[in-house]
Image (cartoon, rainbow, N blue to C red):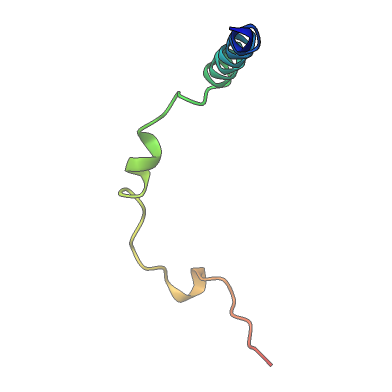
Length: 61
């Protein structure tokens, strides 16, 4: 019974912390575009670049 006096307030604090973190994530836009990164890898540009568009190579010594 004495443990409940400690565990109940700790669980309430933990739930409040999780609610605050969820509210922060929603208001900062963490869940705005959940499908974009998954589709972005499929829509990348696979066309080869011409030699003058490539960055210069560095020779190893």
